[in-house]
Image (cartoon, helix red, strand yellow):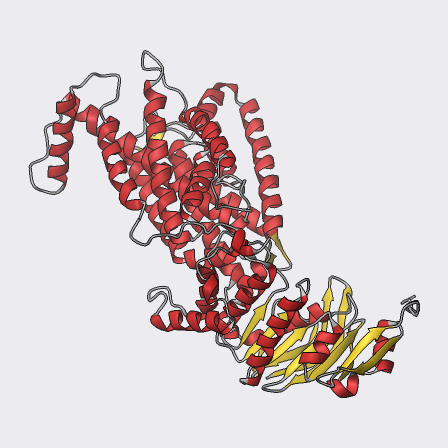
Length: 265
Length: 356
């Protein structure tokens, strides 16, 4: 689904990602983890095609990303942003219908098929009751579900999320990740940057860790989510234990154990 | 506070279309405004002349004889009224586009230096002594149009960083270009003191002495500009979410933005070229319409056009009748006098919409 080879990215002269290799298969749910500023968002932006690459290649479904037209890209991959840049006075239905943009021609306008897709996406994300509300009246969790609905309306096999649930309360987070998990079970490939380690371990089958712009760890959650790895990457003493009901690994911080992070010199 | 505490906003009713109210109002205004003027012509004669004119336009009667009243009503009053209406429509639509693209409530057709370009073009032509008419058309409007498109090209070139056209850099580039052109205009004024009054008169904005030839000059650019804008109106909706999301949704942001800027600048440039610089219409009308209509751009563009036309039409009627003895005020004075307080009322009132 996604094949990244030797990817490097930079902001100006500052390199943000160093030769990343990554292969995401159809139907996977991958969590992208790493300390603040490690390059999680940069990696997602590069994959979503909104950041120029310094070197390397990204392929989506076999197509070279840079060779795809904007609309062609938008029928393969949908993205859910961290937060809406500006919340306009816009009805939920109109917002979700924008997800149909790559399918709409100027002369035909929106077809019944588009309306069906919008309805389906609203139903799927449990936001049908919000459809006549305005986006700027929604709570954080509701808005995020509406944005996921907009991404679903694009009917893409691949969904990219950048910390889609950060800043939300536990209930809203559970709602969003339960939804993503359900979508993943139906065959959707999901790649999500996640700030919260335990959420990532609970919901993702595979985790990748980015540290200082390098991919340092990649593997099944049960194998990579360990005390040694986490303590090394986050420069703190972190204890891992099984979740009482699901047995997936979870972690807690041991207070007073933070080690000073090595400086770059 | 749970979200259910917030009152539901009134839903847009599909059967209630404000355009149905504004279009008859606009048509009635076109006729009504013909009644005002320094030469007293009885109401029924004005109506008769207009009726006969309409019939002859439709080919239902022979062209009317050129009586004095006929000339005054059709060639002096009606042409000016139609022109002010079209210029107002251009300003309303262009203002909507500039506010949408720049996502800035303070943007108007002049933010990106398009008007300064037009003013510079016209001033240069006056300075070079080329402002006399050739074949019944003045070189002035053409110079204004060329100047405004030239200014836009410079702003886009300056605002493009690493191949990306960013909103903030666009606004900054617009301010730089506008300031630089204003300085050049001052320079030209200082270099030729005899032509200063002609330059100032042109820049100030007025419909005095404009006629059907100006209407003819404006219409092609207006149609072209509006066509371009309307073609990309759906993209304009999406651009309001920000560049990143627009890109995620499959919008070719760079190309769409240039097309919209071009369309809006064509409309602005042509409007400024025939009337000079008339402020406030392009700022106030889009705001007002946005509060009434919400932020979907197709109805917004149409209503801003109609509203701008209506506002400028009546502003011009006031401008030419409010002072005694046929002395005219610049119409820009009226739009600012009417628009300013009205705008304050709207902002303080409980209107919704627009930019938060």
